[in-house]
Length: 305
Image 1: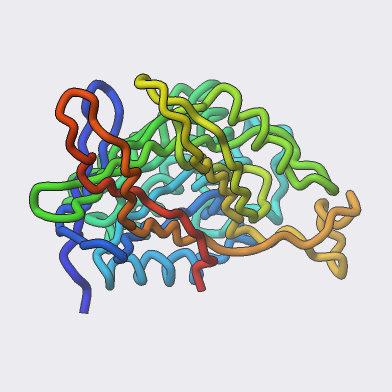
Image 2: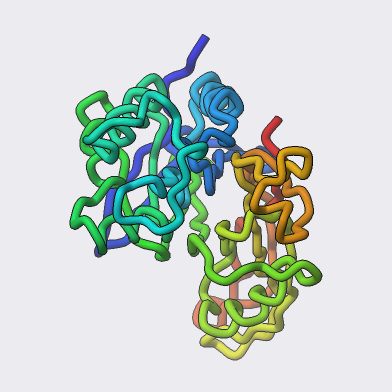
């Protein structure tokens, strides 16, 4: 039986704050579903799998984060990449964009209360640039009318995750999302971006991305210095979520296969955050008392099945 969503989301100082409202306690986890690069309107998108994973989030009251390229939108009259075999029959109409927006909103409506965030990818931004219609915000408006508090965002930005450990104590996790850029690379699979992003995003504990249709998690250990001069170690976790579009089809000579590109991982990602206790034992100079127990969050990710 579906559970009532266990979170709220709202902008504070222009930054979305995703708050898990029920105290989880030490040693317990919260999780959220990441869905990047659905390409929902493409004939090769696995719509059944998208819906299955959304239903899992609904069943446990978990938030859903959609990271861009939810829509493909490549078969419009203006688009030089269009091909007749890459359009679903239900979208083959003069109001092509409207059909897709309305269809995707209908598709997501059952999970509206659980859809917390929708970012824009290069596909949606291309439509905004060329046709001056914001497909993601239009879907967002439909979902809000169906009971969602969804926040929409650009191609990148911050989401602050707030987890209540007890009724009065909480821990925050700064998350940076980016739809992603570049081609990924057949050898590096885009992992080289972790070092680049870590330089200009030092305050992020987690950086999530997509776009390149790869799947990986990389942890960078760091030495840090507090404002009081205490040296400590922490970790920054980089996560790339996969796609729901199956492009690999050498038998039918798909463009992806003609380019000699390999199969890609298919599906979404469960981002898990586990609260643990951490006491540094440092004396407070002003009080002479030991510092109160601190909480931190360990990050893990698993494939949505």
